[in-house]
Each structure stands twice: as C-alpha cells, then as structure tokens.
Image (tube, rainbow, N blue to C red; front, side, top):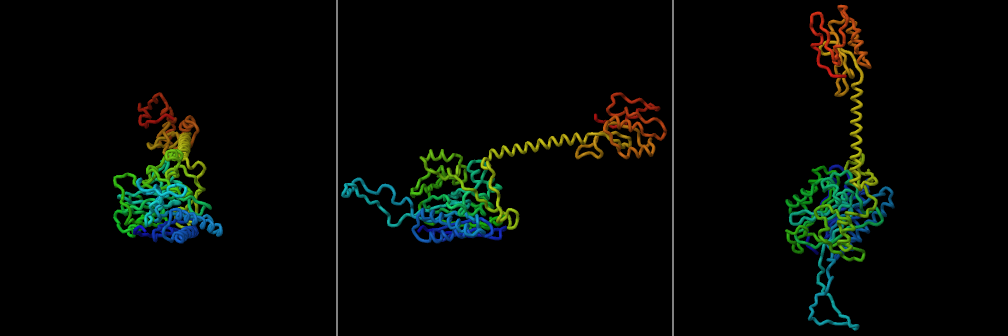
Amino acid sequence: MAELKWGSGTHAGQIRAQNEDSVLADHGIFVVADGMGGHEAGEVASGLAIDRLRTTLGGDRLTAHEVVEAITSANGDIFRAAIANPGQAGMGTTVTLIAVVEDPLAGRGAPNIDDNDPIERDADGQPRVTPVVPLEQPEALVLANVGDSRTYLFRHDRLRRITVDHNYVQELVATGHITDDEARIHPRRNIITRALGIEPDVDVDWWTLPIIRGDRFVLCSDGLVDEVRDDDIAEILRVHADPQAAADELITRANDAGGRDNVTVIVVDVLEGDDPPDPTVELDVIPQWGGGTDGDITLLDTADIDVIGEPAVASAAERAARDGGSTTLAALVSEPTLPPPTVRPLDVPDGEPGGTGGTLPPPPPGATTPGRRRRLRFLVVAVVVAALVAGGVAGAAWARRGFFVDFGDDGRVTVFQGRPGGVLWIEPTVAALGDPRTELTENAVASVEATPRFDSLADAQDFVLSLERIDGDEPTDSSDSADSDDPPPPDSTGADPVDDAPPTSEP
C-alpha cells in the first residue's frame, strides 16, 4: 500500500456543547463527516456514516466503486434510522473522503506486444493476446464528496480546493455573483443542497487521482473554513511539517478565531509515489471522473477542474458539448440538479434562537436569481428613500405652518413663523417686530409670554397692535415687519424704531 503519514483531530469548538463531527483516519481511509439535525441527531448521522465506511472498507485492495457504494449504503443507513426514530427525523451528514484504491486504469488499453512477435490464434482464427499485468496492482487515490465538508491539495507550495461545496452559496460563487470571501460570511452559507440521509438516494461526487510524492491533503469540516482563510491554512501547512502538528494548529486557529462550529481536520502526507509534475504547470491536478454506472472512467480536461476556487460560468450544456457529452465537475456546479435543500443549524449557542435544532427557511422562489434579488432590493431602497423625502418635505411644511408671538432675544415683541421651540432642525423665523418689553404693561407682557398662536400673519399683527403700552400711547404699527416694503415713519426724536431690528426672512 502507498506510504502515507497523517494526523487528525476534532473539537466541539467554543460555542456548541455537542460535537456532531465524526472522523476516520486509518489504513489508507480518511473521512470527515459533519452531522446535522440537532438534539444529538447530527452526531448519530455522522457516526452511522463512519461505522458503515469503517466496516465496509476495512479490507485491502479496494476499488473506487466499492468506496462509492459504501457511501451510498451509509446514506441508506441514516435515512432508515431517521424514519425508525421520529426524534431523529431530518438528520443527515456531509462526507468528504480519500482512500487508497487499485488504479482504475491498470490493465486497460492495448497489450504490450511488438509487431514482430508471433501471434497465437484460437480455433476460430482470432488472435489470442494476453495483456501484460503487473505483479502488484498499481494504486491511486479516490476522492469522494457529499455536502460542504472540503478536501484541499497542497502541492508545490500552493493550496487548491479539489472538492466542490454542495451548498447554496457555492452556486452563487460558481456563477460569479459573489466571491469566496463573501461566501464565508453569507447569511445562507449553512444551507446545503446535498447530504447523506436526507433522501433515499444520493449523488456522490467522486474521482481518482494518481499518488504523487510530496502531496499533502487536508480534509476538514466547515468549522475550519468558516473561521480560517485559505491563505492562512496554506501558511500553517508550510510552517508545520508534521501532519499531526499541522492538524492541531488548524483546529487551534479555528477556535482562536471564534470556534462557532465543530471543527474536524485530517492532514495526509504522501511519502512515496509517482514523481511530482513540473511545478511551472499552472493546473497540474488531473482527476478521473466516475462517469457512469458501468464503471467507465472519463478523463477530464484540467480546465474543467475548479482547483483554486475560480467561478465556472459555462453552462452544463456548453461543457458537455465541448467535452463530447461527458459530465464535468464544474458543470455540475454550474447547473446542478438539486434535491430539496438541507438546512444546517446556525452558528449560535444551544438554546438561542436559530441555534442547534433550529433551522433557516429555504430560499424563497427566485432566490437563486441574484440579479432579480438585487433589482428588488434596489426598488425597495428607492421606495424607502422616496418615502423619507416625501415625509421630510411634509414635515418641513408642517413645522413652518402658523405663527406665534413671543419676546425675541433683544426683548422686543416678535411675530415668529413656525412652531414654538422648533421641530427637529427647523427653527422658527422672524416675521414681524413690535414694541420693546419695557414699554408694555404687566398684562401685555403676560399676554406675550403666553406665546399665543395664530393661523395667519395678519391675525398675529393685530394682536401685537392691541397690546397696552405703559405711557398710554398707541402701540408701534407692525408695518415695521420684515415683509413691509415701505420704510417706517420716524418717531418724535427722529429715530427710526426699526433700525435695530434684525434682518428677517419672508414668511
């Protein structure tokens, strides 16, 4: 068997009391399962998946199809357990897996026979040719994935994601509507579109890779990637040569960043294998896709493999036409055929709204059309802004409506337009001026201090003219108001009584 070295670990995180992740790392089989369902049902689902895979894949000389069949069997185990126990209804789990298997391409193709070799023929005259079969069956790695737990490949000092998340936001990333960084904090990142145990049958993404010396694989639950960026994961893998130390540090870093979810990590190093490809090759991961129930393997163009998280924008139909009808990994992301979405509990403590056992609602109709959602959001914002502007105009008109009489800062009787004390930022303005306070009787002063209000400027001016003066003279004519165009008549001393009046605005 291939020579591998690995390290693994799992942790409940800093928020959740229960760890619903399960892990298997032994004898060439590496699995991370992230359970969901609440009330410990998630732990049951992930545990059932691990038990089935450990039991079924415990022998040597596995094939890729045996691995895939074990995963589908685990799906059936969880689905039946959920039906048998109403308290576990709706439980499910993600699975991401790497296993050493027999090379699916071994023994294929033309036999190794020289043209000058004698050809034996059978009784019917047909050539009898025996392919050359090696003494030890060549090995490969099979990768399988259901849900949003991930597998990364660290090669040539570069980290590549080699699985595709089966969740709502990955579809937005794949179509270029949001970035990977936006997906990490998207409010619907917990909605997964595929998991074990939700339906009687499940589609398993799987493909094979050659065993390359020096490759390092990271399998993890979303509790790692939601807290630690890919660049930081790569840096930790560079610093820690020992796979166990690297796994421990990744878990520690996720907890230090908040630890809002369970976190599970496996780091697998390939110590012996084929020579690594040229490091100058940009895309040097060439998987072989499981292309049908007959066990045929379809080689993929590397352009179809989203190894660094770049969005795949071509439609499935376009890719199938280009690839001669074969289905590609990126095409499945672009236009997937999805079962009803499964909702993972929110990343909040047990007992809190939306916590373990709580669910998010599925996306509303049309939610998978982000362009339409953006237009709707713009429309709503425009309506709200228009309503605020209209309300502001109406409020300003109301605040400026009416008149009242009071003493101004200079002690003179003043007619103001607006509301006493003002409304928000809209202050009353001076409309007309009357006599100084010192020239009015006590009764007149009390009448002004009552701040009488009037519907019109004329009524306010009539009130000012009616105020009683101490000397018994007629009150000053309010024609000195700011809205009069004629200069006021001089008093007995020749002084203009409105010379000291402050400038006023038109009502």
